[in-house]
Image (cartoon, rainbow, N blue to C red; front, top):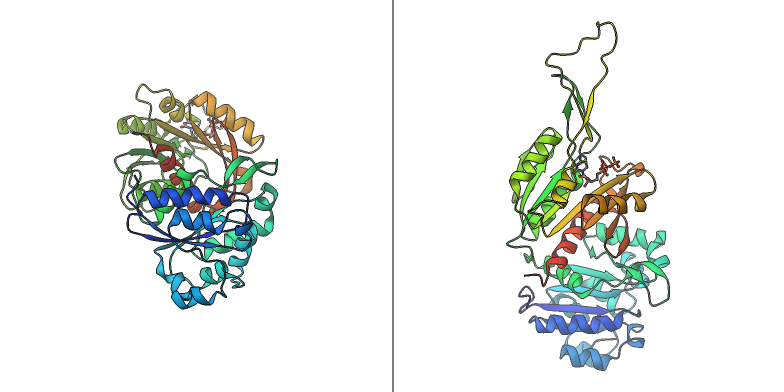
Length: 399
Ligand code: CTP
């Protein structure tokens, strides 16, 4: 039983979407874990679940209106907005996200969101087109920059018959997101190996073959995994980034150094290979190549070891192996092929034509055994948090 919510009070706002019935399961799960749930049902939420079922499961009175004199006399809505340790909106509909992003206070739910001084976690669920609409994505970006955590919805078949991102995440993922809010450490006792940055393959003592990888995404993932309690070994190529708190860093230069450092870091439970490893190395000249020689020296290239494939097929293979795929075209088929070839469980695929190198945002798709999920454009930090939470949810229930 997750102990992180034991004795905590959670204000749960249930919005008006078909996924509202799943909020009932969340109430039950939170109750089992020892939390007190104060339920709030929007007017439209009440079209999908009854106040009675919500109240029966929570063992609390359900608030629906700002204008109930009895409720206001018992505990005013401003007081209610501050009585909880955490405010969770589940499901957060497109309309609720929009009104919250605009700072509106036109019903009980939005008024509470505006009045609260507590952390807020939004768990969206809506039709795929509504989720992908520029207005919704803009609202989510606003909410995130206001400090609100917006959980990435799941991908799959929807009640409306369409397919894509927008489904309410599965319960373990919601619980992992709530756990993260309470600084819980669901990955305690797990060892995660993360690679990040480029590798440099020397041509001579002053020149090298390299690439534009900044290391930001890998460092953010190492930090997010450490935040959830994992012991993290970060094998970093040459980058100028500070070491995240609680992370053990091993600095390397070449692909072969990186492969050796990864081998030395095993055993691990989790491997997340984010590094942009140089695919080839040159024969290194012992002295600086001079341009006064008769012709430019041709580079003799040798293929580097594939570190991800080595880990994916290793005798000590981590239980969960995650690779990245940097592509400029045919993103999903290429990433799916890499997933198979390299023995990875998941591939985080990104289109690097979007100017991802060095930037702070990243548009990724997550490929698993069951398909591809479009995570939309997000800050690299948010991609890292979502991935770490997803990893925690994967391990939830695994011994
Ligand atoms: N990778 C690795 N070792 C290599 C090359 C890549 O561990 N020598 C890992 C990366 O860290 C990433 C994944 O493999 O997790 C895919 O990297 P990517 O550069 O997209 O693919 P490549 O294998 O280099 O294939 P290609 O260049 O043909 O796209």
